[in-house]
Image (tube, rainbow, N blue to C red; front, side):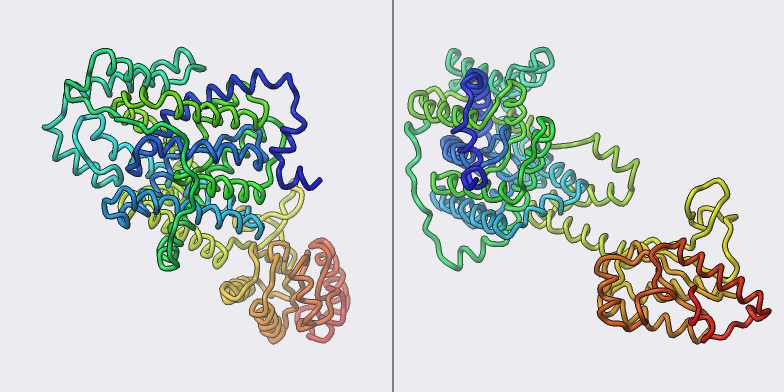
Length: 578
C-alpha cells in the first residue's frame, strides 16, 4: 500500500489499538521528562539559548512519528551531532548569536535535503559503511571533547564549549579560580544522576538531578552566591521560517553537512535496528534516511538544529513499554506545553546542573568495553579506533572522522591488494581441503598445484596475483598442472582477465596447464564474453575442485600407462580433460 510504504507511522496510527494508549502516554511523558533537560543541555554545546534545544524537539518528533518506520526510535538533539554542528558553524558565526542560529538552520535543512536525496538514491547501505571501530573511536573522541568542554560549567569559570585541547587549556588556566558553591551544586547533581538509577532504574536521573538543582536554586536563592542560572526562556512555540542563504554559503557548508548527514544517519540506524530486532520487526534503511531528512528539515525551519536518533530517550521509551509512534507525538506535545506554560521555571535551572548532564552524556559515549574487545581480537582495528579518537581530539570532529574513513578505506584496499591466498592439500580425517601453510604434512597430488586466491581479481592486485601464483609454481616439484580455486574471485575486470591470460601463456611455455574451478558470478560471465582463455568448459573450467582433481588423476594415470608422463607434451595435456 502506498500509505504504508511512504508514511508507515501515519498508517500505524490510523490502525491504532486503543489498549496501547495508556502505555504510550506514560512512555511519552517519560521521554519528554528526559528530553527537556537533555535538549537544553545539548543546545549549550553549540552556544544556543535553552529554547533552541526545545525547538529542535517538537516538529522533528511530530514529523518522524508520521514518516518513520521504527516504533521505538525517538529523535531529537544528540550530543555527537551537536558537537559536529558546533565545529562547523561556530567559526563562521564570529560570535554573532543571530548568525549562529541562521547557520544552524541552514545546516539542518541541508542535512535534511542530503538525507532525502540519499534515501531516493538507495544509499541506506552507508549505515554499514563505517566500521564499528571507527564509530566507537569517533564517539569516544566526542565524549572526551564534551567532558573537557563542560568542566567550566561545573567549576564555575568561563571556557569554550567545544574542543578537547581548548577545554584542557582552560581548565589549567582557571583551576585556581574554581567557584566552590558552583562546584558543590554541580558535583551534587552529578552524584544524584549517577547513584539514583542504580537503585531506581526507571527513574530518569537527568530529570531528577536538574529538578533538584532548580528547586535548590529557587528556594535558597543560589544566584546570590554567584551560581549562574539559565536565565529567562521566551514563552511560546517557534515561528516557522525558511533560512536565507547564498550559493557560496551552501558550498562552504556542504562538506560539513555531508559528514553530519552520515554520522547522524548511522547513529540513528544503529539505535533503530537494535530496538527493531529486539521487538521482531525490521526497518528500511533507505526509508529511514528520508524520514530522518524530513525531520531535520523540520528542525531547520522551526529554528532548531540538526537532530538524530536519540538512544537514551529511545531506551526510556522501550523501558516504559511504548507501543507505537504515538509516544513521539505525546512527548512533542508535552514539550510544547512546557514552552507555553512553564517557561519561567526553566529560567531557574542552574548552569552547573546542565554541565553535569553533559558530563554524563560525554561519559556515556565512551565505550571502554569495546576498546578491550578490539585489543583482544584485532590490534589493527584497536589502532584504527584510537587513531580516530586522536583525530577527533586533535584536528577536530569532522576532519577526524574523515581521516578515520580514509584509514579504513586504505585498510580495505590493502587487504584486497594483498589478500590471503593458499596452496591446498588433504589431511586424513579432515573433510575437504586444508591449507599447506597450516598443515605442512598435508598430502598433495604429484605434479598438481591447487591454488586459492581470496579476493576479486582487479587492476590493482592483478600483478600481485601473477607474482604469487608463479612463485607457488616455481616452488612446486615438477609441476604439470595448476588448478585455480576461483571461489573467492567474485569479480574480474579487464586488467585481471589480461593477467590471467598472461599467467596461462607463461605456464604453457613451461609445460604447465592452467585450469579454474568454482568460477561463478561476474567472473564466469567475463570469461564467457571474452573467450580469451579458451572455451569455458573442461579442461579450462570445472564446476568443482573435486571434478578438476579427478580429471587430473585420469590424465595422470593415462600418462603413466604411456610411460611418458615425466615430459608430457603441451598438446596432449590440453587435449585431454584435466
